[in-house]
Image (cartoon, rainbow, N blue to C red; front, top):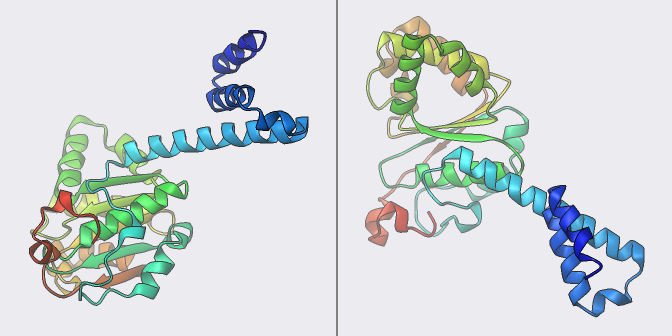
Length: 251
């Protein structure tokens, strides 16, 4: 086929979306009725879409979101004082563009992590980089980095992520090293990048959990000064639906 070398060249140039679209045009008679400009525009659109989908897939893999949650599946029927208007506002990801934070608090099973993952996934779809970790996992990694001399590189890597999602914050009193390391993380991100925190502990207890009053003041100022606070109340969704967390279609 005379067009096969063209298709192969497109693949060689990693323009796989355009190559597939060109092959599809050759196989459909409808495309032959279009002008050259129209056909070329469709090829460019398909290449752009292929590139965007590939980039999104890469961002989602790097995010390591622990729940398969999408904002369109939010359950507004369960009584937990979820502000529908606020969630619609947050779904625009404007809070990421404005370098703001989100704080979800409430009892276990109420859907904090699910909602956090849904908004983080939406941020990925908007083109932002995301990383999801349990707070205890982050503290362990910071301790290792401090011990092996890679702390600077780790802090730089964390500072470049648009949205850092931390689950189960302030579940246990922080050690001195954890306080100091976390303050560095917060300081790097304040007014430059966004964070999402989930916690069973009310915000009023965080100061006590962090420990050192001076460090606690500094951390909380950076976390809460520019944060949306979403306090969820009510019965466990898991208990109500009778499902495991990874089986839930929406929360």
